[in-house]
Image (cartoon, rainbow, N blue to C red; front, side, top):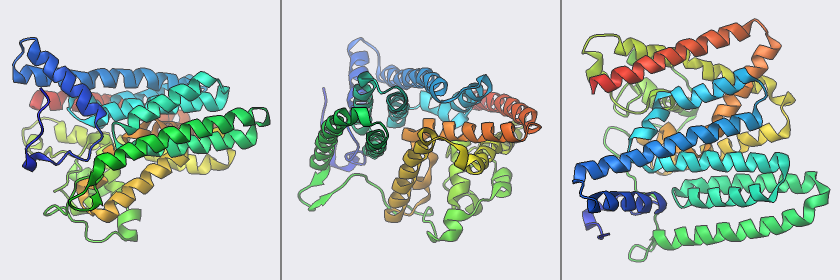
Length: 381
């Protein structure tokens, strides 16, 4: 049975329902089949594993859609498959796993529609966005991105303008219905407010100032020294948005200090992951270098990532605490971020041929370090 939570258990009330409904079905089906509570929870975790597998399958299709060389495709898939924080998505009970697979599906269908203009991709993209918005309200950013793509097609392809106009109308009505549902669900009449999220200024997590130093600083040496990005960790890491985003993108937001003292090479492997993961930072630099030469289809990916960043900054402006700056808030756009990184790396090795072997070997070392890190963490826990 689906019982109403107790009044003091309302932290997740504002969340969209799709993940919780699907997980509730799996959980109750497991109990009805004779499994005990712990086994039923494992069944829900297995659902995240299924989402993670689908995520990688769609990621491969997305890579083949946007990337031309085998090396670029392999680098993209290495980013998606080996990055430890993404592996966590397949083993936790969290709506981020479902949101990630729906987000990357939306990017594939939108990209396919932009390149091929088949109607089926419009309908599939609309479905993916609708399901993502029913998983996390922040995924409505995908709707804004799709509207931008539809408008681009409207002005670029004259012979399908009438069709695009009708599609914008249909999609706009769908988004209005979704947002209307979210408004109704989040409205609290007693408080006369709309609550889309529950958060607070948690103790010892408050960011001192949302200033240029916070948004523009990057402290790789402090991150390497700490070998983790934890909400209660090094101030130089957690009070710098780029540093904390990079750290949580690579190895998550968890505290590994107790494992660093158990001997072995776990801390060293954390440092190696963070060090060679700088390859992705180099990819970002390469993207800026190649920006003028990129076609508009690729530039549009940055629109979605930019919208995601705006939402994160807006969230931080309301609740300026470290846990609200975690990379997991980018789950709808991980696919786009990976593509942009690889496009940047590709531009660099095409312009500076000597960099190609360096990029390949850095990627190999990173993958080995990530594999060792994940296996060691599993053994230690």
